[in-house]
Length: 338
Image 1 (spheres, rainbow, N blue to C red):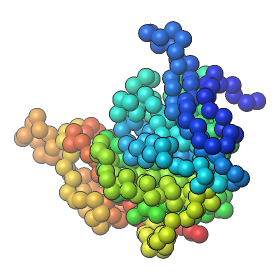
Image 2: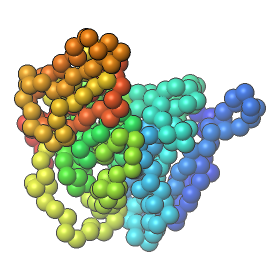
Image 3: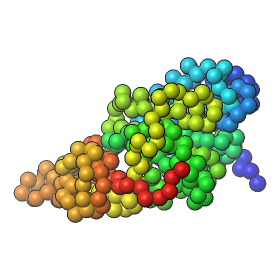
Image 4: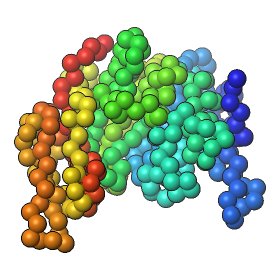
């Protein structure tokens, strides 16, 4: 039995041409008896062809996706499209407007709420609408992320693993077509509540990204996302291919090697990392230390790498609490690709 949502939309997903509007989710906080949360959505449809869903703003402190998809809403010519493009540039709109990873409305991380709950909080209702209404009309899904406020990450396109080998190859081919400097296979330690994991579960060709971060807007990451989003649409046959696309073989494919790929803070304090992003590191090597600034007589806690690879992600704020992710390692991917 289909789950019933109270959400309604102001666009017609089947109408040719370009439409911009909103997904409305009824919301009745203290100061608004019969209001709604308005989530921007655009649909660009022309002729016959596949449907691509492009999403940004899953985390509100990751800015490249909303910027690039907003540009596409304004600039993409319906006459250049063969098929349909659904653009969700600020899917977690309250978090986007607040510049926060989590929603200020209910405190939830949208990327840990899929498949959502149409009777739950605003964030859960939003992910349920994407899962239950948007995914079923799509063929492919591109979710643009960055490191947000807490991490700085080497710009990369992300392969979400799929259990079916053919589906995994389909994902990998689309990710390689994106054309990021790095391609990384990331399974989020088996987490199934993410938008990309839910997209794979729905059978969609799925592409993710991690672009810079540190709470800033990276000009280089914007350039990569602008080119990459159009490259994926060209790969799907929705747009014409751009010239001078580099061969996939020219770009390394990496993976995060499970729990050993992460370095976590062992105490509260201030983290000092020892290496810049892109450094080759070895298991057992000193990775950084956590300083106890309020007790200078206490030696800092030394952290070590637990895997060989390159330094892929690094915590941006100095202040940490025990368990914070400080560093992320990526190692060569040994699996099969197209």
